[in-house]
Length: 243
Image 1 (spheres, one colour):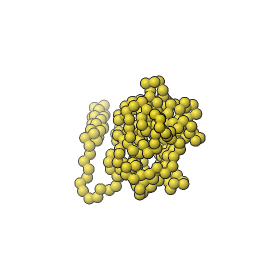
Image 2: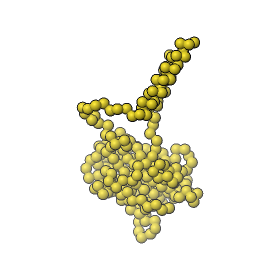
Image 3: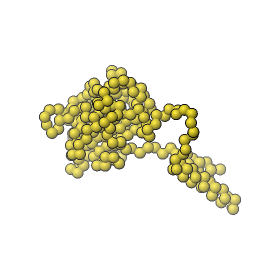
Image 4: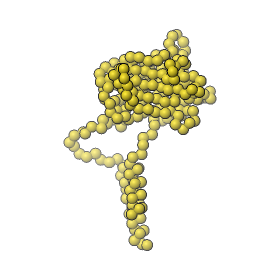
């Protein structure tokens, strides 16, 4: 009996493995993109002017990526207000947010620079009315403590951060992102390559009832997991009979 309970628990656990952290390619047509009518309403200081380091807050929402050591993305100043940088934006109309995609980069790791050079420790996403905010999501960027973002399957360089996440659906027109820095950081002007928002979950669904129709067919991997579990239980049953 104890074995049966343990085996059943194992099978159930296989069905609920957490999603791995990854990023989608930056999108020029997501719900937060400036090309779809979204507008940045307020932000902390960004480096501007005719220099190699200059940037624009709009680039965070514009799918602008340059394959250089210094990506042409949002580059906050190295003198943050307090211990964080932030940006607030508004969509043309209220949207139902179900997932988002964040791509960032700290200084080039080929120069032995790590997250303390233009990286950040924490990312917060909020929704609100422009004056008060409610947290949607919080992420710690260096959970393994190696001072590297680590890259991923889409942006492979170790100085890149990939974060694509499903969230509990929220209806809003106003959003805010905050980037938090540790006290030991050398440069705090982070590069935020892209921030995209979607009204679908990462698997392309909305979680709503599709209505009448045939039941969905389980994927082959589902059959494999279930079959393996049942085979294990059958083997154990035969073994008990022989004892």
